[in-house]
Amino acid sequence: MPPVETPLNVETPAPAAAAPATRPEGREPLPLAPAGPGQLVMTAPRRGKPPRHFSDLEPAERADALVALGEKPFRARQLATQWFERLEDDTEKMTDLPAASRQRISEALLPTLLTPLRTLSADRGTTVKTLWKLHDGALVESVLMRYPGKDGSAGRNTVCISSQAGCGMNCPFCATGQAGLTRNLSTAEIVEQVAGSARALARDEIAGGPGRVTNVVFMGMGEALANYKSAVAALRRLTQPAPDGLGISARGITMSTVGLVPAMDKFAAEGIPATLALSLHAPDDELRDELVPVNKRWNVAQALDAAKRYFDATGRRVSIEYALIRDINDQAWRADRLGKLLNARGRGWVHVNPIPLNPTPGSKWTASDPAVERAFVAALEARGIPTTVRDTRGSDIDGACGQLAAAPEEPRG
Image (cartoon, rainbow, N blue to C red; front, side):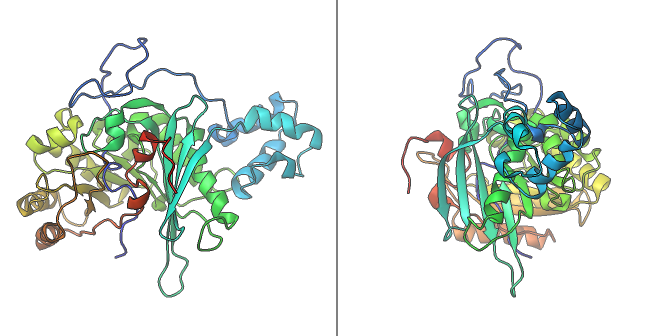
């Protein structure tokens, strides 16, 4: 099968989970860096909300928003058609809207949420990573990756998006986790990362010719299921048929988590046929406690049981994400143990994605030797586990999520 898509070798799968807050609400600001080794920040710091955007609104809410501006209710569908279907972001070009209304509609419902600070490209322009500045100065990253098809087919265009500014999960090998959690993103801030890529593809601004977004992975900065309401609302906006949304197939969307068990079960009940990706990184609790601190709240067995329940509820095969870290978690016996754990829960419900670690500058964590990687894969395959090494992108442009945000002032070519 084709390689799995994502540029964030390491740290994206290392996002978060959620649970009780580590400090009482109302005290602010929370430090940007984690409070200490292995400590979690489960409740996002309180910051000013971003301005309301058309993408925040459910289709049923849009007519009321236009009426409140003195417009006729049918203007809502006209605006939705322009924004989601035609991918037009300039109200002056929305000629079906009254000329006298365009600026008012733009200011009230189409505020600028994401301002690009830096854009880096790799793979002959087919991988593009963008550092965005939000309304309050928070920084997030997204990555657009084009994968050519075989025998002249269209291929895939995948956008890896962030759901939080930073991350509170404190995974030690993850650039975002070590930066700490700044805040949750709004529904529209999540959606607009995809919409921006969709516009660039439609306008032939990305190498490879005009195209459309086919896949979205919630594998950028943050733990999406720790920002549950906004992440799921964004997912629905991405999948609603145009002009209500962007019309992307739910089967082309992957929601990643480090194992927030209650949220995994809640997501399984949403009825959305998306793929769930569990960032495991170790099959034994002793090591996973160190690599993924949320394991102390929901251990390996609990996370895998929840993943299997997701498959049972949706019929969608679960991905197990496993960053291979040299001399830490890459032993063949650990692959064999993982295979046993997965098979104990049934067959045909899961797929493993070993991920060559994309080390961050100054980190002691580094990628496994290729021979060790091959032995790890062989041990899984010997247990009958479908396994595909992640096709990583963007290592030469700070491909691990959080690296670009950590040094936005450094000019990169």
